[in-house]
Image (cartoon, rainbow, N blue to C red; front, side, top):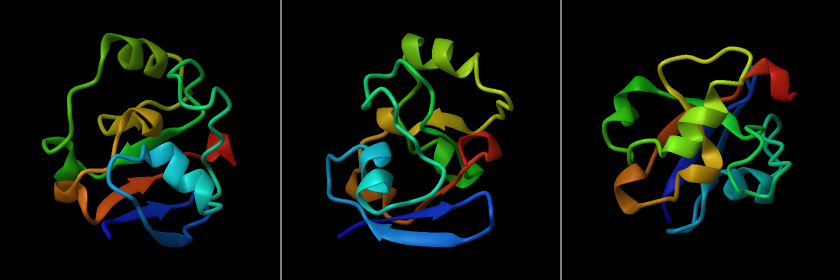
Length: 106
């Protein structure tokens, strides 16, 4: 099964199994990863699943939708790798993707 590596704000590294097709917000919640809240349940309306995707993975992901781009405008510390984990569905080619989690979601 493909893996996702979440790096919590504390520096703790969590490598978890990610079923194909499952969004990375739900994968984090299913595995008790600190730093993903998912308040809206994955409907792209709250940005509490914000994470920083490592640069090496950015070109392998689908582009942001207009809604995701709008939601990311409201996060406290946007960076070039900012994505909403609810908008990223696990694919085989994403095996090993690394996502750093921001302090504001602790």
